[in-house]
Length: 478
Image (cartoon, rainbow, N blue to C red; front, top):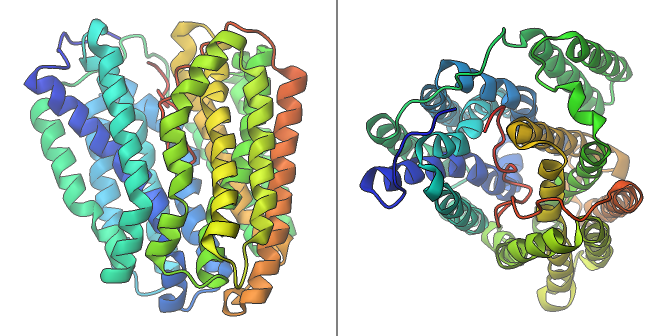
């Protein structure tokens, strides 16, 4: 990939950073804001917990299935072109979400919205790498990281305010003016780029098979459909066979020859499954069982984002000196302790004594974990494979979140209109937090047993790398 010689301090360089930050912010804001809006959506559209699961899972399903394909398309057809296509697609799907007359239409629109996110997300950081001159690239990525962190922090506040003041439909419709600005800036100021080394055919069979596998597994888990689950497992096996035989696979099997890469992705799967369950159910518990307004629920979770903004870069530097094993072991255990403290959250809870200690301990654990985890993934492969390694890790994280949101409510005994009975929902929430704490402990055990070495570059994760944002360079080539 040949970088265009553009200074980050130039007017054009600033426009490029602005376009990429706003583009990635579309996807990040959507994740945090929609979570806050779920109770209002359920009440207005007459949906039970299953419909709310599909509202989140539909988006994550297509995003997880197609994000690596989106990166490949950008490398071949032009990163700016695919980035703009994805932004326009995302905006059009957002309009459908905002106008949805039923939960079924909303879920269909969310599926389409995930397709747009899969096209625009990989191109965000790729455009910086391709356009900004090498000596300024670190500063540009720093701006992208910092401003993206601000977007993550604003999400819960913005979502809560919009739901309270305007209604849940505004959560989707606010994407439209943002998308217009992104497309205008990208078309006017961002140069086109491609990967000159990208060759061979797109792995369409792999993309179709993994989408079918994730779709069947998600349907089987949410709807408790045994045949769909079995077919999903079979399709996942077929996907592995296709990737092993493909000349240009979406997920190169050779990456997993590295024990550290394999271990880091196993940790990612366990940890991000827990995070997916926590962030889905916590805001529901705060509103259904504790009685918080949407904006209060958004504010209640802000300490998690604030701690990650302040501490993640420091955790990355520490891991760079001592290696990722200790923070990848201690971080999940500390987060698990935070989830045990969340067992105190229920009807009659107070923020200062019940909610705040839990989210602070949970946030401290995430702050210790996420940057070293991403650093371990990138440090396990050669520099020229960092892009695809990060993309695979991002897909693993999205997939585990998808499956957790699909499976946890049923496993915890939350179904139908259980949110109408605070005590019933609260009991299910507590059961789910115990399961998520178990997943975090499993992740810590894998890290302690399999992660080795002190030379991994654990500083590659932006300060805002959290559940709502992809690891850096979530695309096929950097």
